[in-house]
Length: 413
Image (cartoon, rainbow, N blue to C red; front, side, top):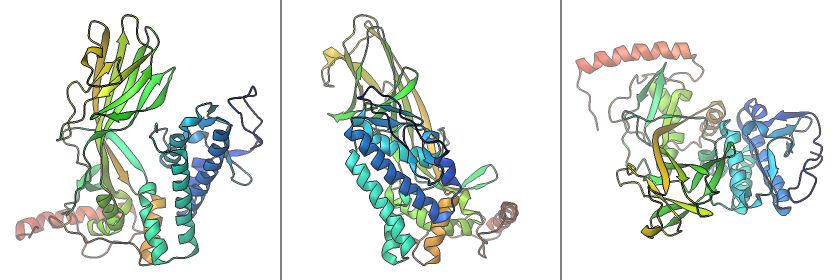
């Protein structure tokens, strides 16, 4: 990069050196540990780039394909794509958002109240962990690397939730297009309570704008500036996340669970989160205040959301009922969409788990099945077996399992 554009100055664009490549594509083609070494190096360069912009009251935001590397030396280029603006206060969560977009290969909206320096320190420690394992395979470096697996947990998929959707923390494996739960017994909680995310997304001028809210008196509140006659669209998120205990169990046991079930480990997944996307819209009929506030009621203890999930007000305090915008002054609508999200193991993450296992440092937990594992293998399935071979073995085990179910009584815990 030859230069960057500074929002506070008249010049808005500086020439970027030709010959770049998309960082996401470059990372996807790197094997094993090399992938994570380069990934964390790019994030350190993001820290330096955001810091420079922050010092000049600027910031950058872009999609996952807007992150470019210089072709000749793979150095990060900021400013060629995406946009540079004056929202320097958002640099902390924008840097975090860039990390997840580059990881998932999707332009998910980020947010949060973690500071720039906190995120910078996090990425620096992440880089140190990968570097130490690369230089020396010790029990201490393995333990440190394992603690970071939550940040690199492979691919994720999100789908619409239904009444038959699995619960958070459930582990499954795939056979063709069918998913099968692995019947496990755990002595720890699998899911955290449902709660609203502190961040919301506002649709404005053709794009989603991230808004960071605040907790107040049991409610979650977002402050929104509004113009007369403007229609406001706000997307909020109610989520339950899997606990660290079940996440560590999944990372430590995935290879073993796959062998027991006779499937490739990339066919194993965990329900990482579930909840609701809650759309709230507001149109004020008469003269409106310059700022309105949206408050959400906390979810019920069993995880559901009230029929009226929130309310709009001209006052920043939720208990001030006189300030709430009523039906005669504004049009208010809500839409709830349930979702469930899964975490699975991709090639890069599988390589990392195998590396830890080969050195004897993968912390494999005690695995207790509620019943015999479906299609459980009497002999270990080769990690190099083809998908067609595994599928044939799985179908054979299904027949064996059904036969065994009628010929003997199985002990369950």
